[in-house]
Structures are given as structure tokens and as C-alpha cells.
Image (cartoon, rainbow, N blue to C red; front, side, top):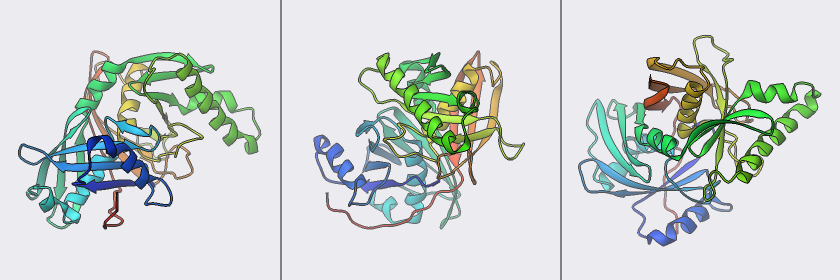
Length: 304
């Protein structure tokens, strides 16, 4: 999935208090490695799972991971875990509810019985969380940015204006340094005193004119992995575009395609993330998304 690696830990029988340490042990060398470790367990209610998400950047539980929902949707059909988790896979679509720390997240899995064609994730619970935590515009390190929940969202054109006079050999380093200073300044303002803020980067200059823009997710550069795709991040970009007036205040239902997946950390790439949003009165009232490239790479056992 765009170079992102997500590890699903199925029905692991360990105490809640031990899951963060266990998840980090899986994500760090010399173990499997990855960006998030997801503890997946059966939950009461039809076709419902409980998930707890350990994030390598935050080094703690995080409330939501969009990529997790996409990977899990594929794994339920393309491995044997559906039976293990008491999940019924109806054809041609299956609905599964994921109970996350952000709230209930339904996913719709479109498939032909042997292969998944698309997973669509309902992100309404995450949208509500973003507005609850805070959505505001500000200037950090001289750059116009938007806080959307636990993300700082930057338009790449604003970043370019600060580093455009640099020589090309210095350009990439200067961009990374600027993004790092933006996050450092945000932390100093103590707006999210006990949380780790991530970052999302986008522009409105797609390679294909039919697409909305290009994205990447530097998160905590240079100390954390850059994620070429990010489900929660793409939703925060949609909210930021509404706040910046790049999407009309009463636009209604929109389908936006963003180019993603460049493993170098540049905006854009060979993959597409589909974002469906409903906008009313300068606010996103519904969001769902799908990644177009998701693969189950390996199945096995891990000792926790």
C-alpha cells in the first residue's frame, strides 16, 4: 500500500497494558517492521471487530488508522482470518464494523469471492474527532498551515514559496527542515499538550488534470517514516481544503482523486486515493475513502 507496512495481529491473547510494548516490538528491527501494529479481536455484534492501533511515530495507541481498515478488508477475504474472527463474508459486498478508539468505523468490501476489488472506509467518526480536537488556520515558521485534529496540514505551494530560491541540491533538505520547524513550533504552542501531531502535505497540481491533487505524509520528519499514503491524512486534507476555501462552503457531495504513493516523500505518485466528502456550511459532514493498491504480503506467526 504505497510502501506503507501494516501488521495485523489476530486475536493475540495478551493484556491491554502490554499491547503497546508488544506492538512496538513487532514494528522495530530486527522484527517484522512497519508503520502500525493492529490488534484485531472478535467483538459482540454481527460482523464486528475490536481493533487497537499501535503507531511507530507516536509510540503509543492511536485512535484511528485508515490504512488499517483497507488492509484488514483485504485480509479478511484473502487469508483465513475471517473464520477465526467470526466474520461472515457475503458476496458481492460485505459490511464489517470496526470498533476503534475514535468510534465505530464501517467498511464495505467489494469482492468476487476470491479477490477484493475495493474497500470503502466510512470515516465519519474520525471527522467528528478532528472537529472535536480542533480545526483552525495559523502561521507556523512563516508558513500558512491548518491544524485538523491531530494533523498539521500544509499546501506544498506554500512550502515551495519559502525554499524556491535555494539551489536544487539544497531544495529537498530545506523543505524537510522547514516542515520540521513547523511541527516544532506547533509543539511549543502546546495546543495538543499530550498528543503527538502528524503532518500531511498536498498540492493542487496533479499530473492528470482529472485528479484533484497530489499528496504525501511526512508525519514527524526527519525522525519518523514518511508514509506515501494515509487514510486519516487524506481526510484531514479534505477538511483543510474546505477551511482554505479551495472547496466551496456548500459544495455538497464530491468525489476527489489524489495521486499518492511516491516512496521518496515527494507529493504524488503512481497510486490513487479516492476521497468522498459531503460539504455543508463550511464543514465536512461525511467522509469515506479507498486506496487503489493494497496487497497482503505475508502470513505467519509472531512470538509476542
